[in-house]
Picture 1 (tube, rainbow, N blue to C red):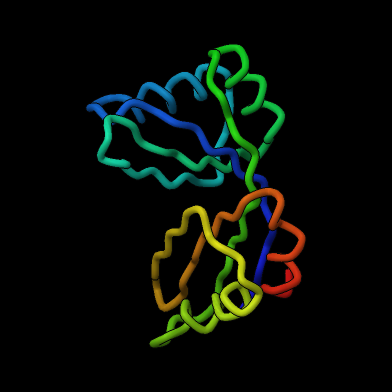
Picture 2: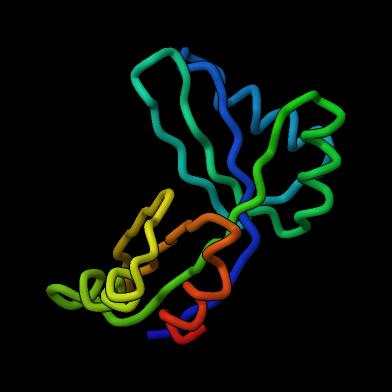
Length: 133
């Protein structure tokens, strides 16, 4: 398992068609380039997007200019060979340390998996230790 610590910012958006596109278009207009993002609906009229920018300061400046609250979080990119139960095994350290994830996503491509786990910034150092980052 390879683990890389990354900067993540979470923002709230309206839960309606085009909201995510509008956010990403605004970022693109300011030349913010992303490593990735995870978005989900909260089913109460809003959604949450966790964004990892290649240049976190550029994302922060874009959000500030647009009047968007971007909450700093800590993310971890975990990768390795795909096998049954690998994600559960890789998350054991976080569970054993009592660290709650804020968001997560995983994908398998060509026998390799990539997982993004986001935790609160205050849990970042403990999560890094638990994951061996």
